[in-house]
Length: 373
Image (cartoon, rainbow, N blue to C red; front, side, top):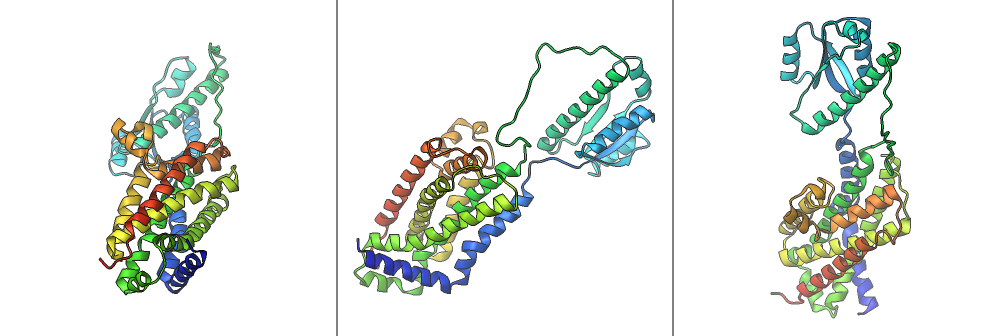
């Protein structure tokens, strides 16, 4: 392999990128736009649930309970119902997601030491929101009950087992802390494949491929010459995405920059080579871009553990995820961002991504032919 010819191909590709505003925009603007857009839109945190209250007791104690819900930050009391039908209409029309119905004699029965039922109705059309809302309700009601018991002098039962819970790596359970690293993996897989999926196809459409075929450039030199400029751009994109994640979304980065570069390089070489292979086979930019999106977006989004937990998938689908490179890159990025793990902890992911990169490079070299057929 000649270093001079390799540099010549790489320089030609860099000039081509510089002259093509679309390539530059796709290389830098699109990843940043997607990360910022989806980073703000995608959130599993449930807050400000619209709540309607039907207080049939109207005592100081019932108002204090309602105030507890309002002060929590999870429930926004938007209306007070005068009759039960108002509650049903608010839920049916989507004006409220949660309804609290405080029964008659609520305060009196509590003061007598009786068990009182607080009716809570949650809109279950979104099961995730409903489940989280019920857990919030249970926590607020439990604390309120304990306070009332203390005020009334009721004996407190000491539990036989006390759980002391601690959450590592993401103590505040912020959804963006695990969404943003996963987004970086999905975006980079799609963008990297898109970048190189247009290279060879563009040469065929513009009629410059015949000139390259006529030169003494060998196939490996041509493949690596086209990969290197895009690899530099993609690594820079990863760095920019990391900076946006840390400084815009406040996601902690606890790992090693060097390990991030090594893991990202192995991943990007594989995905860029996949895009180049698609470009060689498709020969038209439109078809190549469509195949690249289909081959990268859905697997990286649905089968990487980012969109849905792999453990919840059927067994046969879990087996398929083992050949999706984004699965290993998502795991590596979460480990680097949140856990601060080193190279040893990510040895399995690095090994797979390196093997994937080698296989894709060999596939791209084998697929390319210096012929007009």
